[in-house]
Length: 536
Image: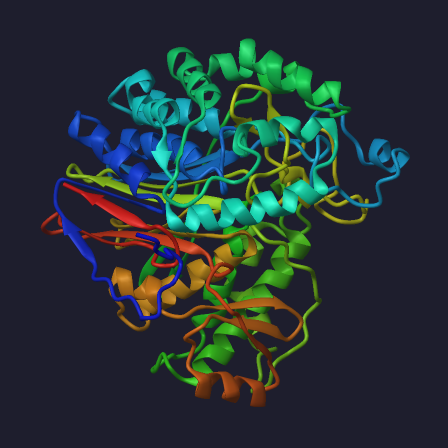
């Protein structure tokens, strides 16, 4: 039987999913099941999140990998904890050195934009601090998928083929050969429904599991990574890897109509979502499908994003602090600039992203909001031979303009797009949420929060609602299915409206909310991808 797994002529309708003992929501069914397997073996939500994240590096390599970065918000024992597992620029790199090589801006691919990967460090740190099971047991499902293989799901197959067709044209140097050896061993992208496995990936995961990630940062894997990068003219060294540690941070928040919305502080862009919510709170949204509602939301987001791109980097280099950017005085000043017509903020180009997000919860009240990414899909295009380690290109976001806050410096962490979200009310956990997708992420967070709090949509409906994405200037792209009469009204308000042909650029979200009285969990998963919720 020949079926087109990407042809869907009907509007899909999903309901929220309910459970009591455990729930894992993410973009790949096999990864969600990996987390649930660990929960049923006696692990907690933290163990389940790690298992799911590790499995995602295998079953969704188009969006993340072992060589990427991660962030987490962890609710346990009545408190929210933040983990920043983004990696810094190598100590040997500098803007001057790149300019001497002829670079006017940071390259997108290759060895230059590679920063220290934080993903394995995140897994090990979360496991050590809050996990119940050993990391060796938690990573076993991911190792099994890599060794035995798994069938390619529809959206995974779609983006894998898009990446392969692009890379075969632009990845012509010898440094890119391991990417093709690993992800296109048959001289093509794997087809939907076809089995795919990666023995090198399995061996790497096993080494990480058995050494609590020490092999990745100080052992044999570290040597392989640094040697390959430096062989091809890159800057990442064994010393950069050996000195890396994930950082526990205090989450930042804003109160939106009685709910506290939490994000990881800068260098992440989560503050942009909070800034937009702070601006928007000054308006009353009585009706969702209303042109004025969308107009004010878009204007609040574009002002927050313009400022976020101008100011967000490592806190020490920010010209304005997070406290100032989240102050009522600042929000009021920006709110005054919103009129009945679209404004023209400082424009900037929005590159595309590649990220995975997961939410996990257990029956004891532990909850995790976790996100990891290689950036722009497969990342730098550099894969360490026979390891399955695809290295990120997160350094692409650095500026080579010495007057910009995000100016490249040795050991500095760049402006970071990946952001986990969390919601609380009156000191009690409501639950984790997130929307991945490059610069769509804070816009997705903003839309999910307002859908939930202003318009009382259930988790699945809050995710399924048609999304908008501000791009630059007055340009706003609307998702297919967005109400046409509202699109026309936004045009009359001065917005440059474009309608997308598919949903690929509008992020992929997951939500788990918890009833504080009964402990019942309710979840929504992303209909724009191969989203799934595993429950117990």
